[in-house]
Image (cartoon, rainbow, N blue to C red; front, top):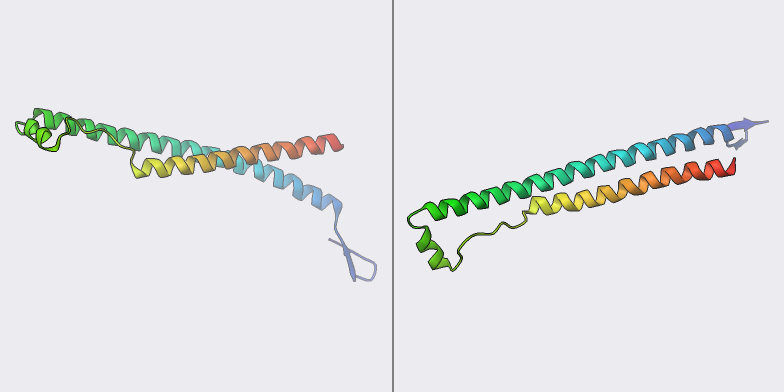
Length: 122
């Protein structure tokens, strides 16, 4: 802000607001990249948790088949083999990955749009 004359009226400094806009665009781009990195980490965690669950179910099925009581247990329960389900951690990681991925994409597009508009106005 610049103070004019007697100091009672303040006017915005146009150069300062341009600097603030540029910094805001760069921050938007950085935040978009961070969101996409978090999205990738969440997707990896979701995949890893699902694979860990599937491996545990497979080990349990192998143990059940190799056990002398395994045949009797499957006859009593009516299920021949257990099937892996999606763990809650996988579901939450996928939801968070979708949210951060969409946010990151929107931020990157918005930061690029602002540059395009600024270029067109010059």
